[in-house]
Image (tube, rainbow, N blue to C red; front, side, top):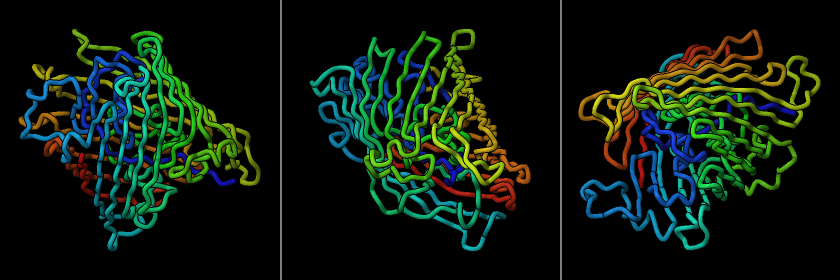
Length: 448
């Protein structure tokens, strides 16, 4: 049986500009503030929480049916399309397009005509059962996506930690697929949330808040965790529990097929259910408020995973091993908040992440990642984000050198519905033995 390298796990990056400053919420489902690219609107408050507006994290927009419309500045639209296309009687819609052009300017596998364009369109529906006069504390989620273009990875760069988180394997181009569909329900005033359906496990596990705006896939997904994620999520169920205001626990069980490269993205997901085992994830997190006045929030996570299927024995190459497992940890911490920026927070944040998996059944057995982000580094550009980070994947094969990614980006909020992001990545030892590559590109995000 072929083993898909955890480092090939992919995701796409669209939504979240508020990563430098994040505030842990009161409910377990909202506390991660989901900066998860490719998972629009995961930063909502718990379903049924009528006290909070519907927050579209990616572009700092709020759709609040109870808000005073006269107070808004109609000369600065939040979206390109009129509001009637975004909310109707408890149904809220998002339409987000991400486009990027990248070039491999040096090293890697090839630099001749090594420029590629890739784009992705996301369509998202959130249905609040309480607002729809059905029942309280429930939410249906439907997410479809389509992408086009080509990636530099297989022919030009050769990287294992994909330089772009809208890369996709396996999935055909030019096809619109219903990627996710699930229902979640909150209990005990939002301190317990249950989610059932076809879902992206990386929306809830193995991520860092402050890594979500980076383009390289490893900053959004710890690559030693081979979970079902975009564009191939899986059927499953997950539970989120607030043990206290400080301590939160998550557990999830998912179809193990996407780990082995099964194309589940545009399918119901039931056809492969049980054929390749089950993947379970467990995560405990702490959300302290540091600083003299609690102005420096942080999230500290520790997680573990287990996959029940058989995996190729990479040490012998002739037999299989029963099960696969690993653990990970991560830290998000706001380090400094600019004085007087409470209404529009600006400041410096840092993150760190680590992942481990056994070398005899995983191509990558260790991963280290860290980075800094600063929101509002320039006067008058309070929504812009500057970030830099390092991601290193160590191969289980001792003959291969670690693949190390250094990324720097600047994410400029052009208006409420448009973002422009120049990005530079230096990739050392692509796939462990390739020539160092320099990948340069530009990403655009539009909220229609």
